[in-house]
Length: 441
Image (cartoon, rainbow, N blue to C red):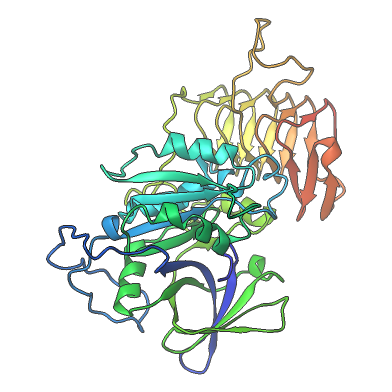
């Protein structure tokens, strides 16, 4: 079984013309055992939902158990090799902050909740402390009902299985004894670092109507950011059956049987790179509805409820930006920027086309005793500093008169020893890095 976090390119042809689509994740039944003695109260008929794909059977199957009783989600929040480094230096991909107030994994978990799937397992392994803490604090009873849960299953070793998880399929295999705790009929396998909105009930209905063994959800279209040697290729026929799978880096394809493809039309970004993450943040502040909508009333995005004060704006000029809770913005200029929680931006600072992730704490600067170790550069953005096209990770200390502008127009650069790297001409300041006064990067 291919990795769920792996993007794949599908070749689909209904009239002789190939159309590129991308495979993202799987609906996999049969991993758990369905107890036929289990008899939940069934609705008179399964709810009708519209199907994107014209090849799918239009009539729903009657007397299917509701998804909150018969379907569980398996969410993977991390991977051993991440192209989002250094954002993943101390956290997993799913735990990366996005759009001021959220974590990446919130999008997928919210899809589950909004699709009435309330049994959610999160399988974690690498740098999972932050992600585990977030999931346990954010979803302990959040719209999950009496029998719903978000349960974190961390990687483990046992006498039968030595070593860590060896990929997605191995992780599921080794956790079957946990997954079989509830008598569900299907498992929805989801990567936790993708950004999209989807009604999974439509996928489940299509899966059941077609009597599929495995259904892969695929997204129409391909962007320039997706043209990558690690992208796989799937060939499907006019009935949306997957015939072949191969990686671009491998010459030998793998032939399938019994695998179906479900085509999805909406926005989908899988965060395969720093550039993709940066663009996803930039798209969430555009006036045009081209990106992910964090303000959708019909499909809300859930996260940790926080007791932070409102943001304080003191004579600042802010345009086309998103500002998180609890910020202190003094006489600064902010344009086309995502500003995370508890960010402090001081007088004269200019920030454009950037992502500022904010801070985990408030630093006291008036001489009183503070739990934060005193340094020459306080947390936040210093006076008269300039930041353009950059990602500034949490708790960073940017001094006075600093310029983070990629002055030499470098495409790629490893300056981690100095507190930053350059990826795709995007400056990335590391978590808790200290950039001294008057630095020009």
